[in-house]
Amino acid sequence: MAEIPTSDYPTIDPTSFDLIVSATGLSASLLAASVSIAGKSVLHLDPNPFYGSHFSSLPLPSFLSYISSPSSSPNLYSDVEASSESLPEPSRSFLVDLVGPRLLYCSDETVDLLLRSGASHHVEFKSVDSSLVYWDGKLCSVPDSRQAIFKDKSLGLTEKSQMMKFFKLVQSHISLTRSGATTESGEEGGVMIPEEDLEMPFVEFLKKQRLPSKIRALVLYAIAMADYEQDNGDSCKMVVSTREGIETISLYTSSIGRFGNAVGAFIYPMYGHGELPQAFCRCAAVKGALYVLRMPVIDILTDKESNKYIGVRLASGQEIFSSKLVLDPSYQIPASLSPRETVVSSNLSSYVAKGVCITDRSLEPNSANILLVFPPKSLHQEQSTAVRALQISGNVAVCPSGFFIVHLSTPCEDAALGKEYINSAMKALFNSRELPAESVQAQTKEDGESVEAPTQEEGEAKPTLLWSCSFVQELREASYDGAVSICPMPDANLDFRNILSTTRKLFQNMYPGEEFIPQNSAADNIDDDADEGSTE
Image 1 (cartoon, rainbow, N blue to C red):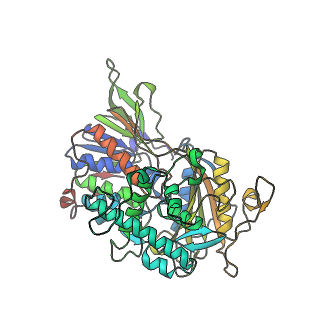
Image 2 (cartoon, rainbow, N blue to C red):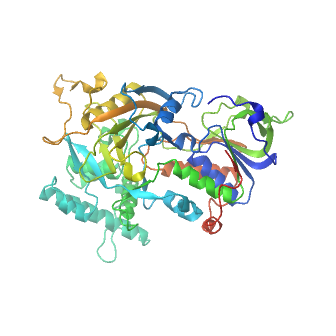
Image 3 (cartoon, one colour):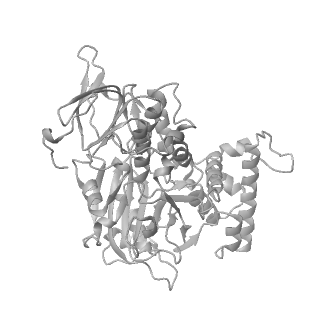
């Protein structure tokens, strides 16, 4: 961002607040809304000329500039590679999520918070048309309901029977758990899963149910959303327990049918995920939060005697004081003020490899918005993590009609290997004249046997890859010390559950005893103009 003369910055009045937030990402915006709703004064800043920080949705040229610029995102994005083709035109009509691929479950807590806070009045959603899994070189539907199982032509009668029996057991357990039952047998013949089975690895429970490998993969990676190969046993980086798997399946199945105009379990925000932090910023502004964009924090002020935090110095030269401060994860904090405690997170990898593709055609006829999962080993014999892909279309206003944006991601510790998985997924899905060499070559098993490059069903033309890029994002966790808190980076998950849990912990550590966005928060947010009190 070009340097702005000091005289051109606005003067902020008052100069003392309960909380200063320097970032407008989802976690920061939730904190600003929560603290404002609690009746405290909030100054919400962002060094960028747009809302959202690392959770924003940017026009394609701005997106590429943002992830490539060390000044805007020091050390957070690396290994950026873009195809040599010119950007599709009109390039600014393509809005790219920094958090992609990302979705909301219809029944998850993020949706509940949007409704509870009144932020839902500032954002609209479209449903995801279908969920697919890549299996044996083909795109197969994810049968996530009884009706879908019966209609699925890729499943044999035995597989359908096995899957129906499994889902019947899961639904029985969920129903009895919600009713408060604690025994293994329900009053009307229902069955609860024994406690010892709930504690075992989910993959072992699925094997115990005698489910074949394809159905295990569907359940583990396309419904329970496991990131890491679960058959690795003790070497698996994140073993999903049966309890955790059942909880995600419960969320998945309860999301289907929650909203009449949503055809499946997932929804996506119109204009991209950058609309979510903006919606919560509007709620905070209604409650009196002051907003100033293009205003970097250049220094942290401390008390000379105690060396404790007292305020910040802005790029304008103005000094603003507060009792608490929330910062972007890219901000370099002096060692004496560095937060001492890290909020518990599920991030086990250090990085997430990502890809963004623009194509000329949908991956599946008659479907515009599609979630696709590549289970471990489906692309590469050494592939130890699932690769997720999300296709979004012009009907969510992120690209012109006739184009599609496809986001891909996989957690990784080695950037080169993560990007290799992403490039292999691109090759499996699209026709392109320009693909990185390592993703085009046939892979080789340990015994030297060649593994054929994945292909779609014969006769199905692949979409053409018009433009693509890949990059690596560092995963940074939230942290706090009571006065200075650091927001988390977007994680490698499909949804925002972990981000939300982390944000709640930050809020509770900052303001013990206060309720995080109370139930009645929406009442005063409906008719007010949230743009009041903002400076851009």
